[in-house]
Length: 241
Image 1 (cartoon, rainbow, N blue to C red):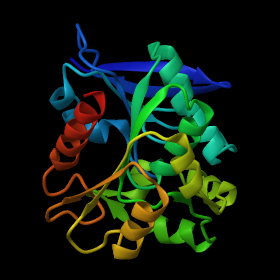
Image 2: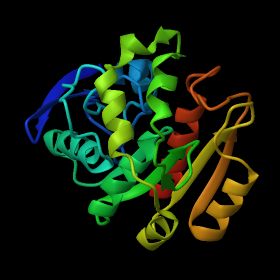
Image 3: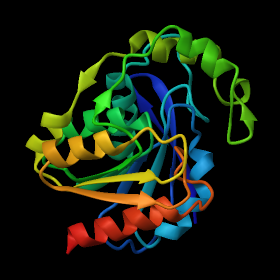
């Protein structure tokens, strides 16, 4: 049964979904979604992971969470994940990411290296990308998963994401953590990860596993919504031995 929960991150009300199995089996997974994703986009994924516990967090400005006028850096978004983790009482957990939710998860892992057991990365490099000002108008004119952007996010949120973005690399940081890393990417058009990215992961991060998702483009949840979750489920099971 999926439960909707709310918590507070430095005065910002944060919403997250919790599949809340009882009893739970294995360590929990904390999922950091893409740049304009709602937690509700992934509600159908949560029963699949049961009886493993999974949290899906609406970072600020997304879904049912509050959208403050300022404060959209990766550090602010990591505060939102941390707030959900604390509210749920998690001690040790796996991280799962998709797209631009990835650098947010990196920040959480770097803050809590003794608590994060593994990271599963969905079609992204081990970097934070500095976004050009054109990002806002470009995104505002798009639809994502059949919904116009204006139905998903307020314009000031996109402006804040762009304004607060920074160019940072995390290849060495991830390797230094010494934890298992999964990179999953699609075989279809539109993926961010390419052969050069795969080679960089293999070269830079010792404990990297690479998996392709057949027929998926950048959106690893289409056409098969459970292909990426199945990949992550197998990976974390292997990590736990």
